[in-house]
Image (tube, rainbow over all chains, first blue to last red; front, side, top):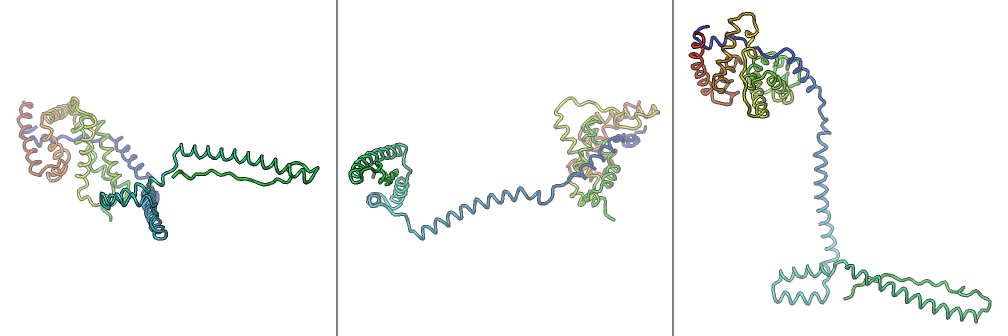
Length: 176
Length: 174
């Protein structure tokens, strides 16, 4: 041992890693190198799906806009009922053009709204009333014609000449 | 003839074995002084080489591969310390660090234990530079790269550590 600390330190040899570690590390390296890398097309699947979804979304918006523009060009703007036009004229005279336009959009949207549950019930109720009335009328006509038929052709089976059909439809016209 | 870096980048297993043989002992010694157990150092060395394999494409551009291995090993060792959390750090014995500690020569065994204790007394930053310089075989430029500090800082830490060790060793030898 001398007075030079650097020399003292250098006189010792580091123990280093054990031999077993070398084999373990090299085995792990071999496994890592042998691990199959995903093919190029497999790595591209994810981005391709994402791009397709974005493209489809964009195309849907684009096509819808194009279709609406085309329909507007063919059919013109939606017709405004006369009573609405009068209300809008009043609104515009009181406020301004932008407010009137806003009210116009709201009123048109409201006028196109789906029938409510109560309205549907009233329509169905009216349908059954009509059906009942027509049934009664039918039976009355049938009785009269059958009576006439039997007096014209004695011995003929009753109701044989009646093959007329009547149809009843649901009337969805909403009250004004 | 391809350089070692190019062979590594190609995934040549023999090239990795060559790199391991060239620096694993020195690097392992350094890592033991950071993580304080040989078992943890084994894990760190294994993880270091696996990281090299996974990022092998970069290795063709690395000019100083041995210093680069030390950089990766240091990062892995610090990660290992972070995962382990702050606990009481055990003292590393001469037997864990030096070949001489297991030899037949009694004076060499004593010297190994003495140096191990002397290094334990150093500031960890100073000790790191001493380990990298003397047992890691790195230049000050490489050490500065590994510890992410200026070259002058690395050199001054080394000188300061030796200045501390000199009287301590002299006092123990009496």
